[in-house]
Length: 120
Image 1 (spheres, helix red, strand yellow):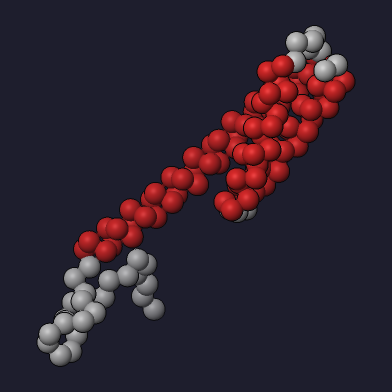
Image 2 (image 1 turned 180 degrees about the vertical axis):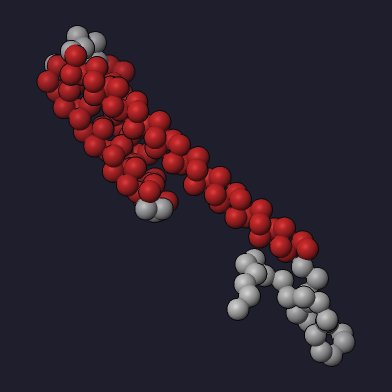
C-alpha cells in the first residue's frame, strides 16, 4: 500500500469515528454494532502498512486518537447513566410497600411510591 492510499484510509477511518460519535450523542445504540464491524476492517490495513509516515499522516493519527478517546468517554457516560437509572429503579422497587393485589379489600394507607415525586 502506498502513502496516498494509506492517508486515504486514515481519512475514511476518521470519518467513521465521527459518524460513530453522532450515533453516540443521539443515543442510537442499535446502530453501534455496524460501526464496530466497520472499524475492525481497518485494523489489518493499519497493521500491514510499512511505508513512511508524513506530517499530514501524523496529524490524522492524532485526530483519530482524540476522536476515539472522545467516543470512549461518550460510551462510558451512556453506560454510567444506564447503571444509575437501573439502580434508582431497583431502589424504588425494594422500598416500595405498595401491593397491587392483596387479601384485604381496599388499598393500604401508605404514601404512593414513584420515581419522581411532584407536587402541584
